Length: 399
Image (cartoon, rainbow, N blue to C red; front, side, top):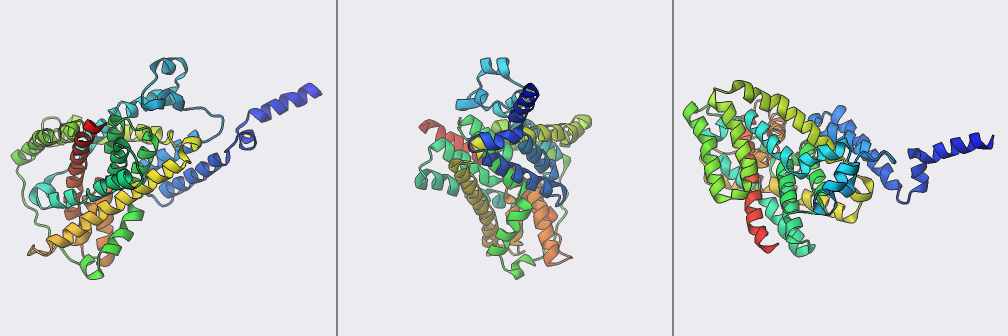
């Protein structure tokens, strides 16, 4: 009888339920499980970017179930890969995470985004480039704040700043390149703000604009962009960005290559694969592997909370920068710009553009701003990658 009781007792102690009572700080697991369930609710019920949010939420749930041990964080401790440990005890998730750690997934994501992006609205209205550039303001504000106020070192401050662009691939690329010890927190912050654009941005835009400004109607001049121009655009952007910020070429180059696949007209099958199958698979893998960095003991810390807070600060100022740039341009432009499209100057494509379209329709059911917002949105994609490369160029000599 005692042996039977011992068997059941040992079994009970090995379950995840026991960990909540025996492991110190187990309450953190409970917090993360609740957060994961809330994100699942947002993805499934509220339909907030489910393609991105659902894998992240479910991965967060998996990695915070005590005793599961699906991800071995010690393999990637110290900012590098312990290859010997990986071969000895690495599991599936550890091998999938190499795509993040080695910067493979971010470049492939940009390839897919480039293939699905129509740069026509940007080419037809080059003024959108100013909005995309201005919407990177928060990157520099957050960098200076993290460096001067909170005393973070240059590489971590730079990695935090790029969160404001709501550009997950660029944030991963920079954090890896600068060997940040907080890659997990930076990735989670960047992708969280990407997914929460529909929640956060409307409040910021309303704070910075009047109802009259939000009701400004813009006519869309469907200027014909020649095929030659569409083909030359990605080639010229690659050359120019490579000369200005060589460190950005891993992302900008793949973005433009994807767009060239789309526009050249001779590789339609590859273009369709890049913008659909490849993009969806990489997004799925990236989302779930990012979430495995959200382990309770590493994530529920003051440093992580500070990074999340500074990332939100950067995101807010990026949005403000784009909106205020549009308002400034209205002082000189004959045809007024709806300041809301400046908010689409961040890199979260096409989420930010869709948010602006919905806000415009809410203010006036006949006011469609999508094409204008798309122009600002795609310029933000290019600008965030170039700014990331520039920051790397500035910071690297001081590391």
